[in-house]
Length: 260
Ligand SMILES: [Zn+2]
Image 1 (cartoon, helix red, strand yellow):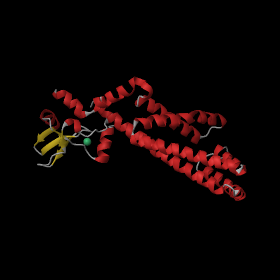
Image 2: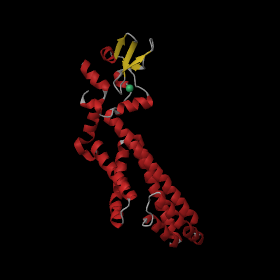
Image 3: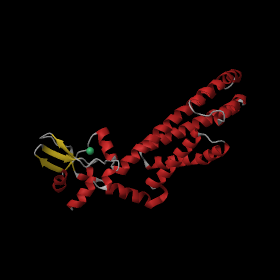
């Protein structure tokens, strides 16, 4: 077993989740390299996991010229996709929470006496519940901010609502960009996430909690991961090197080079 085999194979995960990718190219030399006749029948090589997959007799995978073959994510690219989509979902959850917060502030704008009452009643309970769950809200900036919002002027509240909605929109766009795995999305995520890192450092100097450290670590990881693996801003050869690496990982292109 060689070294490469022992590492976790992300391509296999892709095939397990969405099935093998089989393709019969028109070019006969290339076609030969992708298919093997065995005693059990015909097998075609999967363009993602590179395993030979048996197909029933007389059935053929979709065919066409090699250049029209489906572009499949393999290996490192597959890992990138899984990780970035995890971050995308996490950003969407944040967006929804921010919108909910905006809604609450908006609803209570102009009815601050009620809000004050509700807050005074809820705050100790919220602290207790979160305290039991391991979150330390005693020193929560968010609760402090809410406390300030309770005492704020209606115009201030309007600005808070606008800021919360704007932040939510940024998070949702970031999520979409990361989910689609587009290069603009990666740059957008870099800027939107990186922008808040200094603020998170400032928060940590104010008070350290597991949640804050976790959030900071996760965001820092995303920013570094994006720059390093996606080669943003020309790092490690930039987009040109990134595309070259993708092509080098394409099974069809490797096989095609071998036929030429
Ligand atoms: Zn496969």
